[in-house]
Length: 166
Image (cartoon, rainbow, N blue to C red):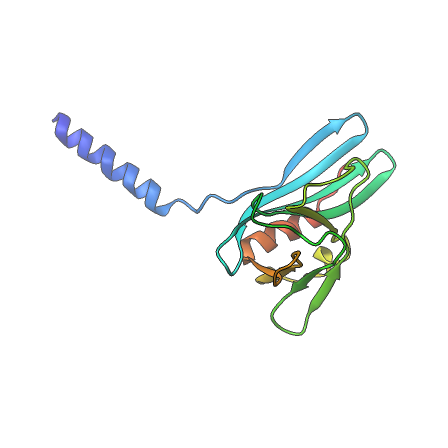
């Protein structure tokens, strides 16, 4: 009898694990200080050379309104050195392509050389649907890195762009 109950339990557990949707990151809200709220999405992505990157899209609000929307890209320390003054190219693989200028948000005085941040306030809302993107990141002394952004991440970025803070 006990073995039969155990077998039923194992079957139920396996069916839950096999039918559960994949775990995806989600948009998080941070109340950093009075009058300042940040919405953030963080994704672990890979470039075409199979190097790992962190892509953090965030939108910061202050008491007087939206401060900006930024994409911070973080490569592996000691391996990746990003060209800090060059724009990021965001490519849909069709005819749509944007340039995002490097820009630090006011609370961030500087970033390490494996990290850069780009102003994407005009780009993310312009994406009409969740399609794959390629982020072309300029590197110092090397060919640019091409990071693949899958549709589920673009969907989350579009959701973050559509959210507001009351």
